[in-house]
Amino acid sequence: MPYKLIHRVIPLISLFGWLISCSQAQEVKSNRSIDTQWNVTESEWKNKLTELEYYVLREKGTEPAFSGIYWDNKEKGIYRCKACQLALFSSDTKYKSGTGWPSFWEPMNSKNITEEKDFAFGIIRTEVVCSRCGGHLGHVFPDGPKPTGLRYCLNSAALDFEIEKIKK
Image 1 (cartoon, rainbow, N blue to C red):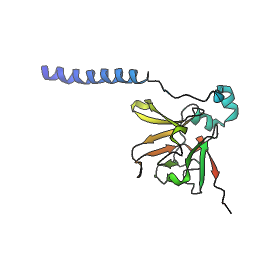
Image 2 (tube, rainbow, N blue to C red):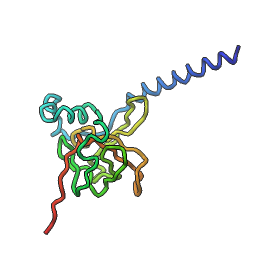
Image 3 (cartoon, rainbow, N blue to C red):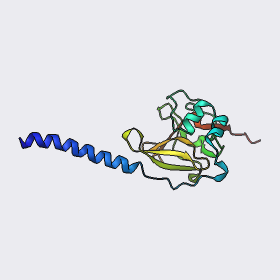
Image 4 (cartoon, rainbow, N blue to C red):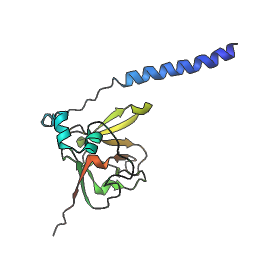
């Protein structure tokens, strides 16, 4: 009898603990400070961005793998935030991760991105957002190449690309 009771109670205790931890996790607030110049209303964002860009940047969506225009881009240049044009990543740190999204091992300037905990889908991930406008860019994972060991996995819809100008 105690054997059956233990096997019924342990899963319930685990579930209860998970629910408490998830509800507490949702209360975590970011300490980022968005540039007040980019205090744009949702209506203004909808007018400025395409439907997909709005979904990714403002609703924290994800474009399908291998569908974005930059996942296989090999040109030299700078990747900027689609919403506010802040320089985020250099093609020098871009690499082929095999995931279907543009991947980088390091931002151009760590102050230009903000990392926040993301508790969606019942897992803990680290979300990457633009420090200037707060736009969702993607996520960072600890499975990238050296020297950082990081993989900034971003949405093409959240980025603009500026081709490097050849100096003569």
